[in-house]
Length: 344
Image (cartoon, rainbow, N blue to C red):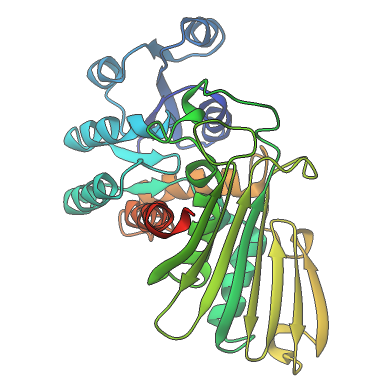
């Protein structure tokens, strides 16, 4: 089959990271990049064999890509993705996909109707440890899930911020909820399922003037399952972002992050080679190698999965626009719950 002609819209930190990864794929030909920064375009045009554009419409008109990676601020995603769909282009979008649930739902239906591959960049779904935890839960290792706790910590904002840049406004997709909590929410949706109700939401300002730096809430389900969510992007005790999830079931308990999982079992599980009491697995025990490593196996795996889905139209996409819309629905419910009940 011919190479997949691929373009990137938005060459910031994630756009450049994705470029390095996807350019390593033998079935992909990088044809173009759209980015408003003159400096970035100048450097890319000088050192990379790609066409460069300030406007994504010119990129579409002149290079006709088969697929694109959308890495712009979230508030710009909707128009870019809708135009890509109109032109029959497959899309991988960085999270949180859009800033509005209604827009996300519209794009999910649109791309499904068109039969175009669509994927959102929630890398936890491709992390080796979290995929193993998914197997454990689906296989009934700890029995019926009763309670869980999903957390994420990092030191993104550690000084007083009066509101500069796109990350400092909700309208552009900034704040700890859009930027960080979206990962923790999608991880819950992936492992446990989307909650039915959100209650007790709290948003806290630590350094930021216009957006929250920490968020906590409670997630409720019809089958008496419940869980909590806590996110803090101003925690200086963490050098790198860490996703944590703790799941308690009738038969035991799982504590996991991107690097390891601790499993406590009331009874041994011989089919899993796990004994009664505490067991520990590390990512090096379960990881599957990737051809090119940047930041983590999951970053390469998600983009290679996107290419695989394009190659095989019947391939299951592990994180569709519909999944991205589910995360946004929870996000909007958190904001609504806080506005209605969280202020004192």
